[in-house]
Image (cartoon, helix red, strand yellow):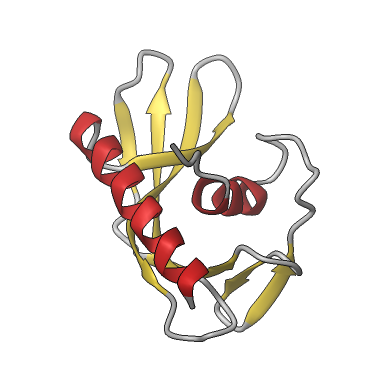
Length: 123
């Protein structure tokens, strides 16, 4: 329980400072060639309702052109839950996805979501 409270405090501080710089906290970007990219952002986060997880989040999707102009912003709010401790996982709807914590950033959006929430630097 202490770990969950500490993680929640770290998360709130991290994303509060991020949101001052931008409206949404981008955690993953995929390039669609030289002229387009798609970014996944954290629009909302809170402690998880399910005690097996640490965070419940809302993810949004945006498409950008090469100059950074928004071409499309998905109006949906896609919910997920994240478990930081072993076995690390991300739950989308009712499906649990195991997270390989040794994976390199940028290889998988679920890993990068987990990393954004669970590997926040502690000062």
